[in-house]
Amino acid sequence: MKKIVVAITGASGSVYAKLLLEKLVAMKDQWSSLAIVMTENAKQVWRTELENDPDNYQDKGLPAKYYTTSDFTAPFASGSGQYDTMIIIPCSMGTLGRIASGISTDLITRAADVILKEKRKLICVVRDTPYNLIHIRNMETVTLAGGIICPATPSFYSKPKTIEQVAATVTDRVLDLAGFDIKTFRWGK
Image (tube, rainbow, N blue to C red; front, top):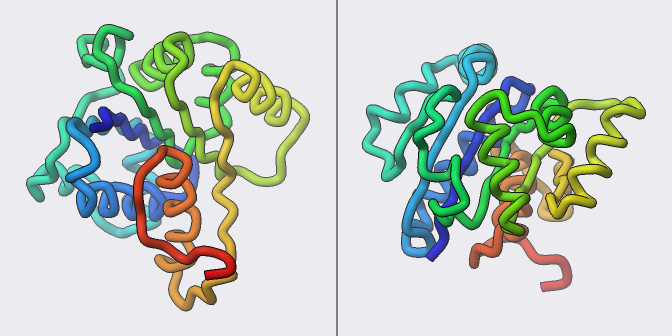
C-alpha cells in the first residue's frame, strides 16, 4: 500500500490536481495514506481556473490529511515517515528550481528533498511553456537526482471530447508512473 503526498503549486493547471485527487480517492484500495499540501498561489489559481474554493475539498470528507506549506511536523518532511511517492501537480518552475537547487524553504521543497534523498518516487508535472535554458537545466538536475519530469502534455489517441478528458490523459499517465493499477486508454488495445 502506497503512502502518497500530492503537492499543488501555483502553476496553471488546477484541473490536473483536481482530477488526480478524484482518481486517487476512487482507487483508495491501492494506498494507505494520502497527504495534500497546497500553496497560497495554487489556491488563487484554483479559484481562477475552476471557479470554486479549493478548501472545499477538506469539507468533502476526502480520505486525506491536509498540511500547510509551513508545517514541517508533517510525517513526509522526514524519511522516517516512509512516504514512497510524491506528485507535484502542477509543478511551477519556481518550485522545480528550488528542488533542483536543494533549497527547502517550505514543506513542498523539503518533502521533495526527502523523497529524492530516500531514493523514492518524485513526479513533477511541469506545466509552463515554453522552457528556457534554466528550466531545462533544472529538469535535468531533478532527473539526474532520481526525479521524474512529466510535462502536462496531453495525448489525443483516445479522442478526448472535454477539457477533463484531455486533462485525464495526463493524470492517467502520472498514475501509471506512480505505479498504480488503473484502467485507461492503452495504445494498441
